[in-house]
Length: 68
Picture 1 (cartoon, helix red, strand yellow):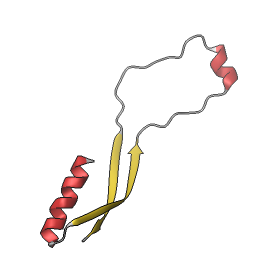
Picture 2 (cartoon, one colour; picture 1 turned 180 degrees about the vertical axis):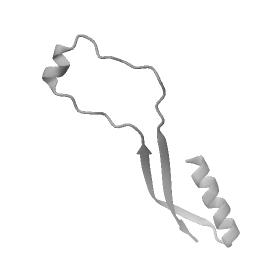
Picture 3 (spheres, one colour; picture 1 turned 45 degrees about the horizontal axis):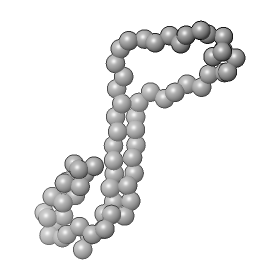
Picture 4 (cartoon, one colour; picture 1 turned 30 degrees about the horizontal axis):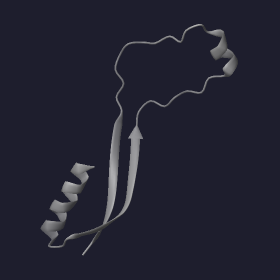
């Protein structure tokens, strides 16, 4: 969020305007989604298998600011 605000300030300065109030914030996340599992299947397993490895998750924040 700091990066988004800093970029907005730099763009505003380059355009010769100043930033106004924050209008909205939107977040989007890309990554693996949980898979629903039927309760009967969950209760039958004594332990859930856990695999090692890496998971990549990306997040983006969009700020909409008023200008003066």
